[in-house]
Amino acid sequence: MAGVVPAGRRRRFCVRVKEAMGGMAEFFAELKRRQMFRVAAVYAVVAWLLLQVVNNLTPGLNLPNWVATSVIVVLALGFPVALIFAWIHQLAPADGATARAKVSGLDWVLVGGLGIVILMIGYQQIAPSRQAGLDAARSVSLDPSGAISVAVLPFSNLSSDPEQEFFSDGMTEEITAALAKVPDLRVVGRTSAFQFKGQNQDLRVIGQSLSATHLIEGSVRKAGDRVRITVQLIKADDGTHLWSENYDRQLTDVFAIQEDIARTVTASLNMSLGLRPGENLVNNRSIDTESYEKYLRAKALYQARGYENLESSVALLKEVVARNPSYAPAWALIARAYTTRVNYSPAIQAQNPRAADLMVEVQSSRQNAEPAARRSIELDPNLAQGYAALAFVEERAGKPIPAEEHYAKALALDPNDAETLLSYSNHLSNTGRIKDALTFIQRGNALEPFVPILNRDRAMIEWLDGDDNAALATFRSLASAQRDGLTLDDSVLRVVQLLAGAGRFKEAADTLEASELRGQLEEAAKEAARLLRIAPNKAALPNPPIPLGAFDFVYLFVGAPEQVLVYYETIFEAGWMSNARTRVIWHTSYAPVRKTERFKALMRKAGFVDYWRAKGWPEFCRPVGAEDFACS
Image (cartoon, rainbow, N blue to C red):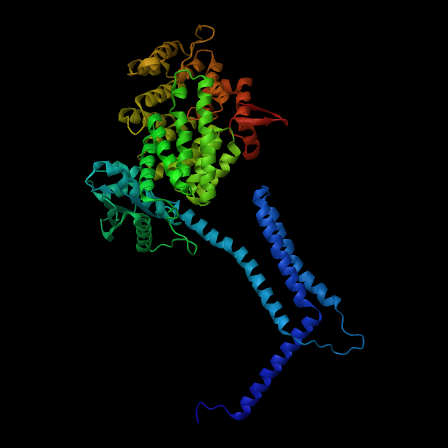
């Protein structure tokens, strides 16, 4: 009958199985007699323990990566050597009889334990490949031509209270931040999207302006303890609505709403979240709703800049962390606000800053900012803003090496954060690495085409790199716009400096005299214009020369180049080693200054010389012997 196996064949099969099992038992018995199980198990356990020690000590002691790699290689090569040694060491009996040892339950436990240890070691070595996959995905997201890109347009405030605008704006930013954690999703226009707030423009035009393939728009209606959020995902090139949803929930569910929106958008775009089990896109939820609203208000004040706004932001954030000490984003924002506040303080905005006055502001900033930044990282080691805030503090404290390391960590976690790209670019330009700085500011500007400060700083670095025409066009455009934190004074100053640097002294003087400047700035501008009309000839100057503050660059062209160092010596004495003016010293017009001993002393004080020895020398400087250096 079909399908029936003859009895003889079954018997032969069973015999072969028994023989194979018997041979396997003899093999395991021989392994046991030679103590191979125990040697392998002990070696694997010791190797695993050594790897734990090395993996934990390497970052703490700042050991190079090759140390851990070398240990892994040595342990891997040593494993078969240990087994061979154990096999040879346990010789057969002298009478030539076959030694047999019964395989016990303990032996099977040893085999199982050995397998588990091997799997654990294997997982630890394979796990980085998962990270490599995430890194590859993030690398794809950096390429504007190949990545899916999303811009979150400002959510409309449909609440009855117009003052709730900060809440709808905050929802926009928080959903944007959650989407930014998706490795292969390029999130653009986080700030530039607000350019289109309240405008009924064609979505296809907005998509092209922001270089976004997809747009998210929505509205927020907040009433009492309830919130209603409406969201739509739209294909930018043709306006097709891919998904829409209404969320009508308690205000306490706001984080869950943000998570749901980000996950649904990601799923609609057929993208992987890149999360570990139990991990969320919105991780920081340890805050009550009242404090969360204060946090969003503080964030809006921080973005508005200005000394009073930053002080108000800090005051609100202190209330937030007092009530919610484990809310990491608030700690990171406190650090950023304290550090940024110095650049808007009366002490540094004075026409001729005094080191003693500035030192008070700097010390207050640093004493509060650094602990707050470190606290944010301690609470959330994956919070990019925490590392960026700490780098910001360290850079200004004259610690460029750790600052660079923390900027790198922040950008590894969020490579498309334009604010961090801007800060890192400024760090590079301050230390003289102009071409590297240009690369990062261009990346930031591609993500945020309509943020004036990014455009201003890109123009500054283009000027430092020798592209006068592009820089001048940008500054003239900004001078006519005068918006979003940039004043007429900022733009006029840069236009005049660019013209003077190009030897167009009469045009620079005419621009200054035609500008509408007030107070001390107006007085300094008059003297600067007078000297520009003498340039490039040497001017007869009082001793000491009249301080010109922001216009001190004029002294480069009238025979008193070292006068421009007075400003740097003042802020460095106060402990403020970096700001927007630091980088201009790398322009070609400052070459005579860079050759002086005063300049070299400043570079040492700022920590730049140690940084150059560790990270590489800038274009204009080179080492001389073991201790000295020269710049041109």
